[in-house]
Length: 155
Image 1 (cartoon, helix red, strand yellow):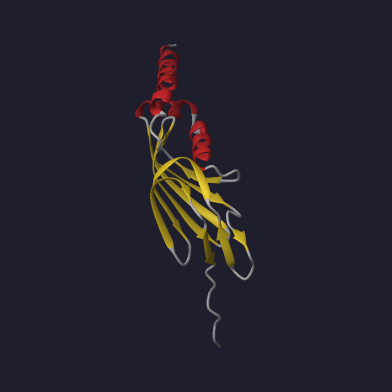
Image 2 (cartoon, rainbow, N blue to C red):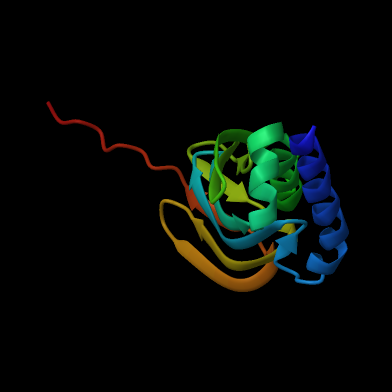
């Protein structure tokens, strides 16, 4: 019974703290984003997010799992069809299939994208170029790129 009371007290403190914590633009609830790395491969985006979670929430994850963390990270990324590959209390990896438009012949366009928080360090990499941004909520303008195609073998 005492463990239940402690869990309820922790939950209440987290819910009361969330509005105060939301004042930071790189924060969403108990998650503070530090960087997002987007690797483009053909039409797929592989996204790695580094973040910290408030100490008080770690006990909640132990008792109730990470579903709320997953939901918040998906909200932060703002992709309807992102698939979680790995998640822990410091980082997560996602895959977004068809994140870029294909124009055929290995030519792709990754459009501008808006996140739901400010990203302190955003890196978007294609096979040809890497773009770095600081303190942005949006990847502006988009990026065109070619898929990596292996050279034809000579026989």
